[in-house]
Image (cartoon, helix red, strand yellow):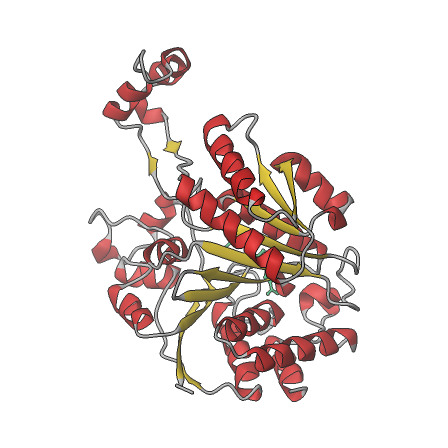
Length: 379
Ligand code: ATP
């Protein structure tokens, strides 16, 4: 079998620590690969004015998959202020590298399993096992935004034939300088693709129900488009129950009655919210793996961010990153090694060996390195 090339993008904060932990476990599982590293994230932005430099993109193009740690993102004014002095005022704009990666490599599907590992003291309940499919390239995180509102766009939005003149008056009166716009652009193709991914997964993994989380009663155009796509795709999977829920109510039900969900599908931002919420039911961000999957490339990352409060202290829980690495092995067809890592994690949790700060509180004894070593020992 050809030796894999896995790009390592550790990023910021706890990213480098959890990526190192995942490598320890991948080695212990006997997965042999080359691991070229790439620079990405906030520190990279501050030094070079680009959070995803061209050489990193080049490295990724020569790899089978990537392991992504975490990156720090800050608002536009801080992005400018923290740039190296020579780069300030040169018109550079910070864009989230993970959002760019998803768009550049068409990583259209974010698959985020949220399964309670028995014995985890942080589980809300032990019987939760749901999977979130989040559309990864469009919607509210599509990156089409303006501030101030450009005049031609404002005119178009106020056009009596095609726009909303009465609604726009308020913002016109405020002055275009004081108006910002983030769009929620969704395509029929994008909606169908994520719904097909969710139903296909449900069929292949004997799941009983797929639930769409949307808000078509308010977001009538984008929500309506997604709902119609969902219903059309659902008709092609008659053995699987198709359910629809408004995003806000679904948040409540995820907490009060999580077992009513099985496979969840949602656009980009709703899927982001649903997966963080679901992660909170099964141990929190330290236990939540995630993947960004395209047709021929995929990036695996924990759901959590760079957790600056824990960075550099060897205190972060590496399990989310380790389970993300197991997902990568599964995607590469290395099923027995993926199974072995997931069993090792489950055994370590059941034995009470995961004692990082998120599990054990301030008295936590476990370190990122120590936890990875304990899991590796079981392999
Ligand atoms: P982002 O916007 O990138 O999602 P965020 O600041 O909203 O980032 P995170 O960085 O994911 O959120 O973390 C929120 C908090 O959760 C952290 O401050 C940290 O206390 C806790 N946390 C996150 N990941 C871990 C982990 N792996 N182990 C332990 N605690 C974690």
